[in-house]
Length: 543
Image (tube, rainbow, N blue to C red; front, side):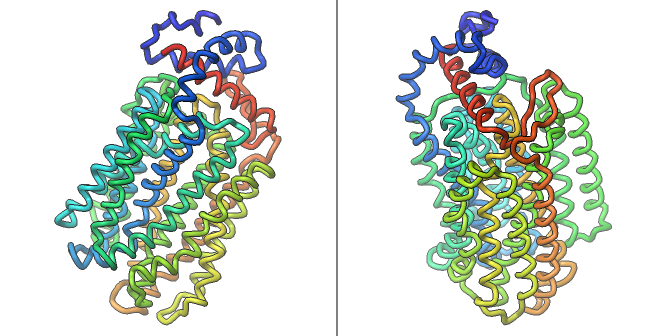
């Protein structure tokens, strides 16, 4: 036992050291005399560097701003789509790709980005991802045509995929366990602000300046965060496993095939050889990814994690939630401009009761999840979101008044807000500390896959039932799409109910380590936090 925690065992500069020490701290636990003896001495020597780095407050600010940037670019384009189409040209599927190119590369590489951070240093890779994202934002702002814009958006997604999952692991490592619910609530509120600001900022800049400035906005934010992250965030590592290149290729190819087929289906026809080939090849590659994750020793996403009802339930809920929500917002932002005649700014302002609600409700939801558990809060939010979409489907019309739409917007906004912060807490507490990096990457990946699939599926339903020809044809396509979105989010609520309630222990892992329900007793949460703090001290000492 002592040899595994000796800094001289693997050498202070070897990457394997942090991962091995993390596993030792986790196994011994703060109550184990052996664990206590190996962690106490290094902890004192590590206190000064941690204080110099800035601790929990700086970590919350930096990761929240970075999350804001990544989340903003999911929806900032939606209210600018008519202007982009007028300026650069392009059909419906081209407009879909200005959104899907970002969400697809984001989704495909999220787990790989988290694995890179675990292997080579989370702060280091966070800086790399932020640099790529900022540079690609400038390239998107200067794009001369629709194809170059789509390419720049894809590179933006690569940067966000490296940066975004590491925001949550860096925050988790910096914040004490007892305060994580509130920290996740603030982080979720800032991400909610991005969702709220996306349509509004995109609309305002498009109308009063130019759509190019929806991308220029990221550049000063990125340049401000980069030095702060370098100076104020502490470095941390995961378990030191080798990178899973086969798993990355299988997941990337499978997701690309599925989304490409869904996007091209309405334009090329569902019986087109290209569409059918993409769909079948994508499904086969994803099946291979699942098989690989079940058998490979160091899989990027170990399938054994899904044996936990907590992990499986919250990830299924996240996938379905984003599928229904993103697809609906993609179409509703165009409905408000193309059918109801609002300007981009007016459309963004009128979406605020829905998209802006997380700013007010997400911190409260994080507090409630600490008090009553995340499962009931998340399930309630998802059912409210489903009810809001169903209500919206019943009132959309070519001449619908804003007052008729307002209840649907408010109900949807409250529902979305109740989901965000507790969902993050459920994900991070459903796995052991050394697995939180890949858990964050997996959940973010499934969210983005849901967003990409949502836009593709909802656009396919819209195109099959209606179109852009007249206001009534737009309504004919929009209404069934919203109904499908409501059903999908309702299924997400059912998936959330499958998560074990507080205090119910789950099955034991193969190595004998017990896995508790995600919001199990507070003592268990405190023990996890203590183990993480000891792990951080050991990592600093070994380096």
